[in-house]
Image (spheres, rainbow, N blue to C red):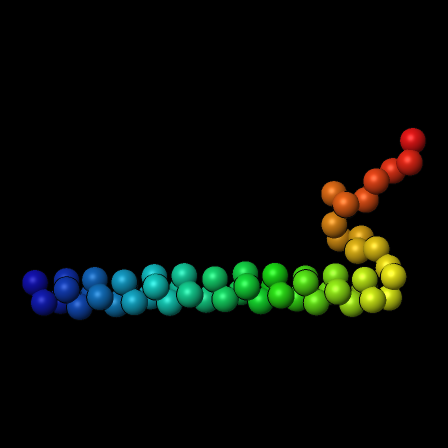
Length: 58
């Protein structure tokens, strides 16, 4: 009974910590992308990693 409770708590803590790490990683990658876009905008360049913004002249 107590062993199951301890194992359950360990699994819960592990799941929560995994979720926190994943959310922080997504936030960090989003901030890096924003910094890259801002740096390219200051240089007057086009961000080639966002093809949805590129328009082809027909």
